Amino acid sequence: MGGPELSIVIPVFNEEAVIPALIERLRSFVARLTPLVTEIILVDDHSTDRSLELLKEVCSTDPRFRYARLSKNSGSHVAILAGLARARGECAVFLAADLQDPPELILQMLDLWRAGHHVIWAVREARRGVSKLDVVLANTFYRLLNLLGEVDLPPRGSDFALLDRKAVNALLESAGSDPSIGGEVARLGFSSAQITYTKEERAAGESKWTLKRKLKAFADAFVSFSYVPLRAMSYLGMVISLVGFAYAVLVIVLRFMTRTPVQGWSSLIVVVLVMGGVQMMMLGVLGEYLWRTLEAARHRPTYFLEETSEADVGETQPQKVEHRFGT
Image (cartoon, rainbow, N blue to C red; front, side, top):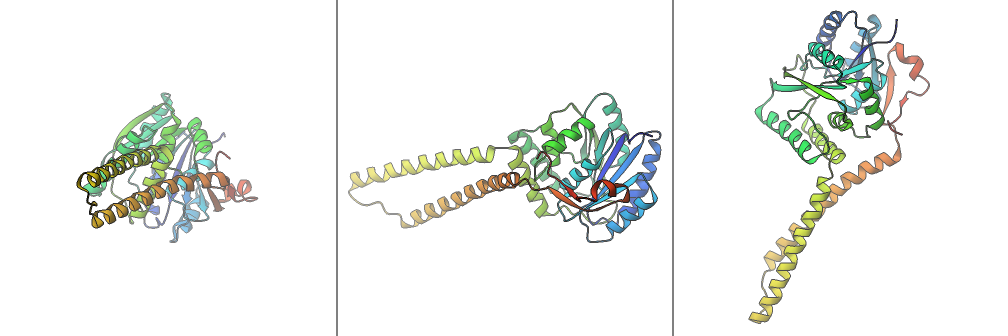
């Protein structure tokens, strides 16, 4: 028997409550794919609950399942990359573990893949169990990234997609040390197609998508795919310089016309504080770009594997390291 034709990659972080339902749903779905040979790779993002124990249990009883555990919590995007690096299928799908993304959609994605597309996005047309504010903020983020960045993502966003083997290999070669999976895939430029679906509520447990993680994802995406923040700093600097020059001319003219010094201790302090704030903001933006440049120059591994399923021991035991892609 040859290798698997389809790989399903699922990042897992503290999903103890939902894993039993996830495994049952996947088993039922994979049975419908016969005779398509399928493997399921579960990547534990260093969970602190019983998630790893549950993954080990299913992998020990079902050869279609494999697991890998990261040595530290690195985020779902890094976990997806780790899973894709271990995927052996002719195509690979990544989706969340919370069952908000129905695995059954993979059937439609496979049809489009067989039609010749290399990337198939599952685009959320609606979202259940999410506040309107979160939906608006998420849609705004993707629109801004498309407008200001060098990528073309689905306007409503997508974190569920199928990639052809060519796209998987290209992604692994080009992804940076702080990957934003959607943007990284869109930047590759392969032929793509879309299907729409309604994102369900979580089957169990609580969302791990905290405000801190959202802000980091926002910063990573814009720094990785857009130079607009740097260009905006240049324009802002020019505008402030022109305003300062104009004000200096005004002060000189008033001094010679009225023969009295221009008063304005309070306004001077305001200008100094505002300018100081703008300069600190500019330094912060530069720091974001410089830090990522430093991380890339260090050529450090993006992640380390703490352990893997028995089926993978032979290929990972000597190093237990996954090197950063593209180095």
